[in-house]
Image (cartoon, rainbow, N blue to C red; front, side):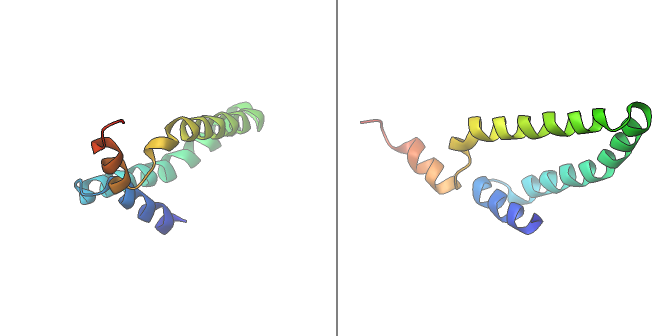
Amino acid sequence: MNITNTTLFSKVVGPRPQGTYQGIYQMAGSFGRMVAPLLMSTTYTFFGPRVPWLILIVNFVSVIAAWIVLREKMVPFEKYEAKRIQPNV
């Protein structure tokens, strides 16, 4: 899954500084994989199973909503540039 996401991300980034953006992307993913288990296990310990599930559902709905709102921007860079340069006729 990670290779697919990285490939799609590189297509969206286009000719911008790929190394920097890929590094930030990987760092954010690693940070999430490091912190999420600590936060969720602590939340589970204090509040039981309901709150971690609620956090998961809110996160899932937020990501789906952001994906729907931003889907027009999630295109390969070349298509984005071509659309941006073309005059509206």
